[in-house]
Image (cartoon, rainbow, N blue to C red; front, side):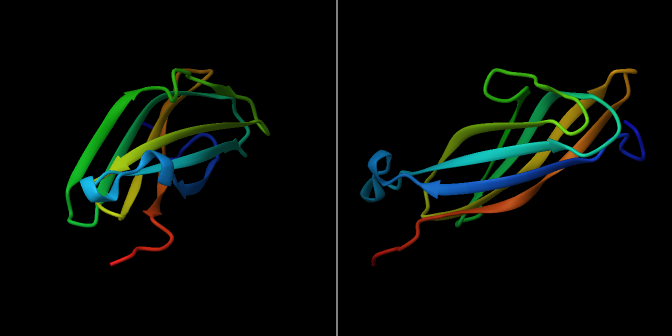
Length: 127
């Protein structure tokens, strides 16, 4: 993997709780997230793999690794962006996710871009 990433990938995340798919009395909290990936660098890059670390409020960690995102391995030219939606289910009303994407440039150089940690939380927790 390259010591200095050959391109500047920026990742932003929006999240929301999905009450209609959740069942708090059964410790089942569904969340949706929308990821926007933007290539601000000088080189074209293709997303190869994802690695997620999902942590609930009790400290339970779930790791998810696999090819691409939502069945795709998008190629982003400089200035292009890719947006997708996905989701996660937690056993607590609050948690977090972070991880990384693995990329390859047109010249075959691989690098990773970190996915900043983001919070998954029910807006109002009733006791």
